[in-house]
Image 1 (tube, rainbow, N blue to C red):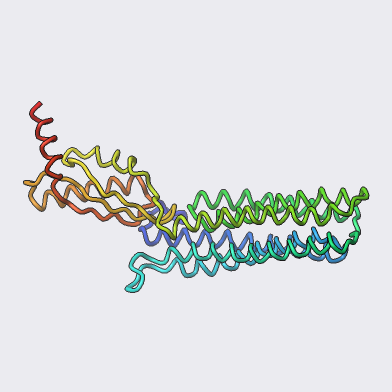
Image 2: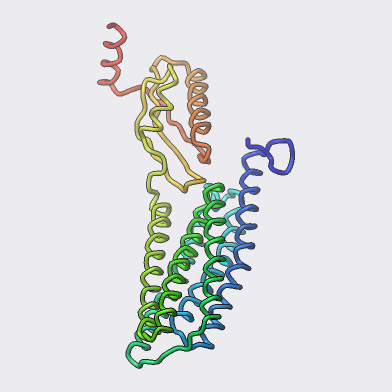
Amino acid sequence: MVANPHGTGVLTPDAAAQSRYDQVARVLYQVLFLNLGVALAKIVLGSYTGAVSIVSDGFHSLTDSASNVVGLVGISIARQPPDADHPYGHRKYETMASLAILVFLIIVLVQVVSSALSRVLHGGTPKVFPEGIALMTATLVVNLIVVAYETRAGKRLNSELLLADSNHTRSDVFTTIAVIGALIGVWAGYPLLDPLAALLVAVFIGRACWEIAQQASRILSDQIVIAEQDVRAVIATVPEVLGCEKIRTRGSADYAFLDLHLWLDGDTPLMEAHATSHVVKDLLIARFPHLADVVIHIEPPPAATSVALAARSVE
């Protein structure tokens, strides 16, 4: 149970999850309109000046908006409760939305590289003026605000979707800085800096692609979420438990699953063993609130372990 941000009561786990999705969606809507404004400003400016670096940066920013839309679609699906066909819930749809962001980034990466290489091969000098540089600086400030806001919200809500989207926008911050530097260089009489800046944009986009791919692959490949020693430390606080093994965790930072084998004395009555398993489960969920479920298999310890425990008790 968690506190209700809209009242004085508490939220059930399902209600808490719905509240989280509402907050994630609200952040995405707010960021969407900011990203649209930034993208349109860059594309219009780049088309007017003929600067391939600005146009590339503008389309990069446009994918920020597209990823926001994809994220909102992913949220609308991921927020659905578990059903007969999805007993573990729909949480991975949010991860799939993160992969859609990756696809958008790859498309932009190809476009940026091709545009930059075309300018290098065929030449051309864009029109640069102080007002254009000022406008690019203004979009940089907006992007910095978006990154800080979305990163903070992503950590607070444990949403890899928001964190992936903030990484996308963070790459936009670096590319905009590079483009501003190139524009100043072009203004000083070095037109080759324009396509070179566009290629630098491609490097930042590629880095963002790699980070998002790594994060999504960890979830989809069921990489460990909680360290085994941390789970053992919680279980060790229950006196009735003799040990544990086969500890496995999977899921995401905010929606994880844990299963393990719990060792109890072989003579423990069934009801008592069942009660002990619930004590362990409650302690684990209290320690790791992002656990959606804990499955515990009760069994006596292996023969060798039983002998060692008996010898230790005699001592």
